[in-house]
Image 1 (cartoon, rainbow, N blue to C red):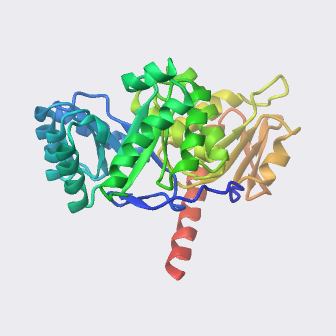
Image 2 (image 1 turned 30 degrees about the horizontal axis):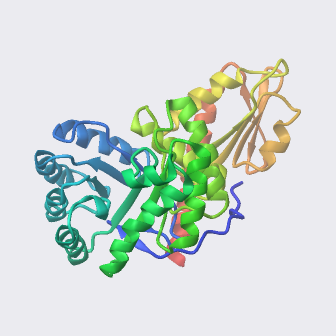
Length: 371
């Protein structure tokens, strides 16, 4: 069963992206970014809604031009999930999307021109209660820092971040979060460790340009897992060259594995061997596909034989242990008289899982009402 995570979170201040709390012990937010052309409103809205359906807390949208800003206005009116506008260099775009109700500005203050322009954006953000994300990237460090350090280093990323932080501090604006992303796991991890010691604001984690679905998920899990296990991080984004929906799924899987935040079913399944009494791999894959809509946190163990099956079933909400011709079924660790025909496991098990998820959700709802 799910247990409380032993991880002690780094103390941080609280900001809000729309209605989503960030920092100060709030649940770690999982976000992604659209990869459609923002000016294609229909495609962008459809992608945002797909991301929201799988649990995205926040969605970032690139707004590179004034034309995209006008499209953003329509997009914002068409969705409910909080939106972050990703803006580089042109302060006027930041002012425009702020007018259109953006929930957060991803903009580096030092990159948008003179003091007057910076102040105008910050004052607008203050007036409309819009937080800012400072986003430093190992692939786009300032020229003088590259000249100084010769290559991206943790110290270079930290210095770049602190330049932007100092600007906001000077303008007495503290509603911001910071990221120091890099495509190299160790560079990113050490940069975040250094930054975590320097500021109290929330940190947005990511291994940037991590790669394709498989390799990018592994790199992200390793890098973010190291930081999250140390209590560092308040929001995460998994940067994959894949469907953004997969970024959200992987993000929740990482948080789930660290017992930080749970959403949906945690499948415990054996890799299968010659002892299996039914096709474990096919069963798990089919159940994962069918049960993607279940958001209730629960453990389901599917083990192909009696070696590890009973032990895993004892600590699962629903457990299945392989047996000859028919497999044993457990509910909250208790062996049931009912058994599943090994040739027709999926339909029956799906029904049991859905019923259990509904029961757990109802129990949680009643508990929340009585608090």
